[in-house]
Image (tube, rainbow, N blue to C red):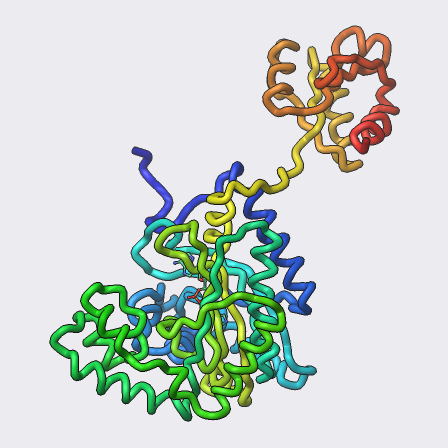
Length: 422
Ligand code: HAM
């Protein structure tokens, strides 16, 4: 056992997995831009109270999962357990309500939650997160879901289901919640301990319980969509009309309430059938009261977060290939000190002109250097030995055909550039 390993629930992304990361992140940037989202970066930590207020006391995230600490100056800080609160903070702080609305932003970066690690659930994961501020139109809700669908289609994986619900608003939700609590009180003997606690701290979350004995009780509960006020019902109805107009299949999931308190109206998740118990590759919804709660002007908002690790798991489960990353195409092999000095200069010229190249370091036989070229899968080996020094040329071997060419050193870069472009 090594002395140190990566902390529990974290992982190293090794070079062999980087092509997936590079590809998914590149496509996420591309698709965000297609839909008019602009990139923003926010700090990896914020004041703890931002998340306590924003995400909500009584949520798993705030109660159990935050990496919170006091810094040396006495500030109470928390490693971001999600993006939304930080992006709303940035929207308010930079006066973005004065810009034409909606303001559409996206961010990509690490998120920290002290969770019980398992496949697809980590203590540090990376989210692609989009938010649109300042617009209540349900066509925007449909657009946000389209970004999720588009990214999956672009990455090439299927087997997805779109789960949609409405969680109402402060006008209609309390009535549903009190009805739910009354109903649960009638079944108090049968519910799990967690649900007993949820009933007090966060009643809607009982609908999300996975314990077997709670399932019949959930099945008998009334549906929040049947208790929506006129405005929320109309919003949900219009969203569905847009989804149908787009020809998108979706399931109304009456149990979908999400684990963050700021949601109002639309909530949704995208589930993959291929990645095990942690099936949600996207999760999001509307949070029309959040900006005000955080001290800003009343500003509606909607967005989603998606775990890059889960997107990659889904792609790998479906054996989707990604483009390889660029690597050096040339190796410089030299024999003797003087040859190596010439080689080092040529290597520098190649790199300056964007030809990726490496040199075989150390004192090694030509055979060993060629073996290295084979391992590195370069296309050309530039060989410099006594004969080449004497004749003031280099010998270039094409590794795929084994053909050899004699090239003057000052023509080498142009010679390689032309052939590597073909
Ligand atoms: P969330 O559902 O907590 O929502 O996370 C969004 C997505 O991040 C999940 O669907 C999943 O793909 C990924 N994810 C979450 N936790 C983990 C984990 N421990 N390990 C691996 N992946 C994970 C939010 O965070 C909201 N802020 C999303 C949002 C944005 N809502 C509105 N705007």
